[in-house]
Length: 117
Image 1 (tube, rainbow, N blue to C red):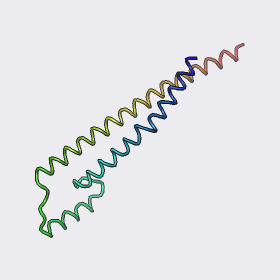
Image 2: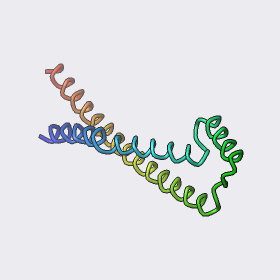
Image 3: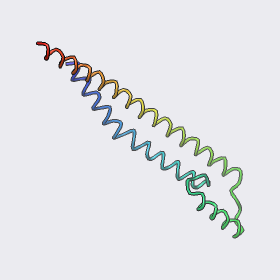
Image 4: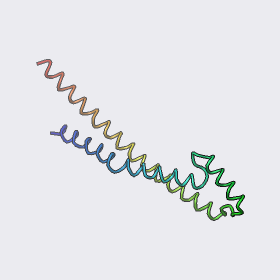
């Protein structure tokens, strides 16, 4: 009976991780990448450098101190959110691993009992 509950709980943890936590973590990661690109810290630095050069040549003002602080706050919040979601996902994966390991130990014990009889 307890092994059925154990197996069912591991299936539910995998499903919860795949359905709820991982999509939100992926969304947060893409939002952070987008915010980094807007700030000029993104992966594609050649594009941000060319846009900054174009902004300077056209006479537009560079972002002020207030905008930089707002962007840094947004990046900090997104990073914290992503870190929290990754921690939840890791904990669920660890609990699932523990649950399934216990189930495999149980099956191995049952197998050894059936072979000795």
